[in-house]
Amino acid sequence: MKLQLALDLVNIPEAIELVKEVEEYIDIVEIGTPIINLEGLKAVKAIKDEFPHLEVLADMKVIDAAAYEVSNAAKNGADLVTILAQADNPTIKAAVEEAKKQGKQIVVDMISVKDVQTRAKELDELGADYIAVHTGLDMQAEGQDSFEDLRSIKSVVKNAKTAIAGGIKLENLPGVIEAQPDLIIVGGGIAGQENKKEAAAKIRQLMNEGVNL
Ligand SMILES: O=C(CO)[C@H](O)[C@H](O)COP(=O)(O)O
Image 1: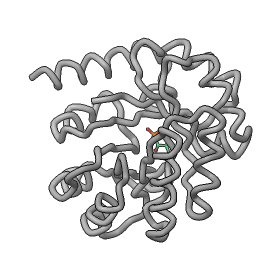
Image 2: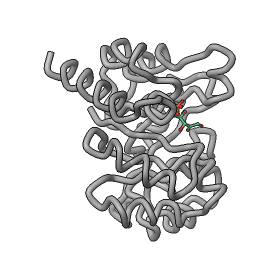
Image 3: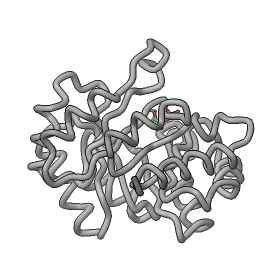
Image 4: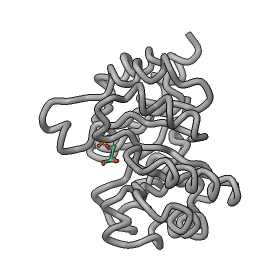
């Protein structure tokens, strides 16, 4: 089970400082969509150059022109790239093919998908590396989460790894670990905490203990 730190509301220097604080506890650094919108793919390159031992995910949330977008992210150091589950199947296929060509991985983001089981099955057949259930920041504010969706997709996905994102923090982590996703994505649960290092350490510890049960 891997831990991904999602960086959303920071610029490049702040992102580097944050990762330095917690790098020993995380596997993947996500350069969130807001940072890519603000700084461009140079944010991905800056983090990969500074932390070559960590995997870097570009949260591009691709919806079209997938081969081009994935190739650009890869050229800038991304190990993983996100595409939206609502993208057309040929777009998903193009992303998967381009990622394979570049030795990278595709994470399909299920944000806003209503019938998660049906779409997860299709995405699995299309060759997604990861399928991630996700409650975005705006729907978290409406009191939603993706915990049920994770259980739901896990029962149909055969090849892809599963991931979960959206409002995960120490307090709700045990329920997430119990559902055994391959990847847990935490943004505010680390980046928004007063003591980020302590939050990351505790999350890692719980994940390790859970895995060893
Ligand atoms: O992709 C995102 C928003 O679209 C976030 O990176 C993701 O939701 C994780 O952040 P948090 O743990 O703060 O919810």
